[in-house]
Image (tube, rainbow, N blue to C red; front, top):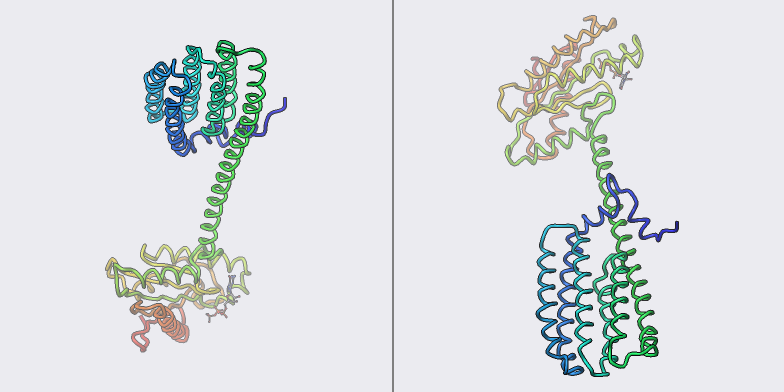
Length: 396
Ligand SMILES: Nc1nc2c(ncn2[C@@H]2O[C@H](COP(=O)(O)OP(=O)(O)OP(=O)(O)O)[C@@H](O)[C@H]2O)c(=O)[nH]1
C-alpha cells in the first residue's frame, strides 16, 4: 500500500531502533521548549478573547468567563505541569492537542447558551482552533489529522444547535472550513516532513564527521609510525622532542640521543636476502623497545639506523651511555646469525650524545653530535658504543 514519504522515513530502522524513536528521543528537549512556548502563547491568545465574548454575546459573557478561567485554566496548568514531568515528547504533544480540543469543545458548549443570532458570525472563530493545532503548534502530522477530525466533528455537530443555523449557513461555513482544514493539514505535513528531513540530514552529517575524525586519527597515527618495525618514524620523533621541549613540568629537559646502526647490513642482505634483512630489522626494533624505559622514544631513523631519545625525567640514574651499552648487548644477545661478521652474529654500533632540549633546533645538534660518535664507533671496529662529550669523543 502507498505510504507517504514522511511515514516511510519514520518507520526506517536506525541502529537498533526506528528513526521515529530516535527522532523523538534526540529532539525531545528542543521540541519541548517550542511546545511550551507556543502553548503559552496560544493560551494567552485564547484568554484574550474573553472581552470579545462579552462584547459580541453579552448573554453568555459570564458563562464564557467562568468556563475559560475555571475549566480551561486548570487544564492548561495541568498540561504545563505534565510538560515538566519525564516522559516521551509525543505524550506531551498529545497532551497539548487534547487541551486544545477540549478548549474548543468547551467554547462550543459555552456558545450553545446564547440566543443572539450574531453567534453564527462568531462561530467562524472555531476555525482558529484548527490553525492553532496544525500551523502554530505544528504537531506531528498524524496527531494533527486525528485532532482535525475531532475538531470538525465537534464544530459541525454543535453548529446545528446554534440559533438561526440552517443547511445554507452550514454549507457556507463548510466552504470556508473545508479548505482551511485541508490546507492547514497540507502545511502541517510539510512542516513535519521538512523537520524530520533536516533532523536526518544533521544525524548523517554528524555520523560522517565522527567517521572522518576516526579516519584522521588513524591517518595521524600511521603518519608517525614506521610500517616495517612499528616504531616511531622521524615525524614521531620530532613530535616527542617537541613535547619534551615544551614540557612545563621539566623546563630544561636533559636528554640523550642514541644513534644505532646495524653493522655490515649490506653484507647481511647480500648473504641472506632482503626479506631476512627486514626480519632482522624487526627483531632489532623489538629488542630496542625492550631495552628502553617508558620515558624513552625508540624510532627508526633511516634504513638500518635507529634512534633512541632517552629522557630520564624520573631520575632513574640510567644515563644515555648506560642505555646505549644495554642496547648494544641486547642486540648481540639476539644472536642473529651473520656469517659475514667477525662475531658470527648481527651487531650494532652506537653513538651517544647528551644535552639540553632547550629549543627546537637542539635535537638537530644532538643528532649531529651522536652521528659523529657513531662514525667513531664504526671507525674503531664496530660493535661498540662511542660517546660525544662536549665535542670530544670517548669509548664507553
Ligand atoms: N632488508 C632491508 N635492507 C635495508 C632496508 N633499509 C636499508 N637497507 C639496506 O641496508 C644497507 C645499508 O648498507 P650500508 O649503508 O652500506 O651500511 P652497512 O652495510 O651496514 O655497513 P656499515 O654501516 O659500515 O657497517 C643497504 O644495503 C640497504 O639496502 C630495509 O628496510 N630492509
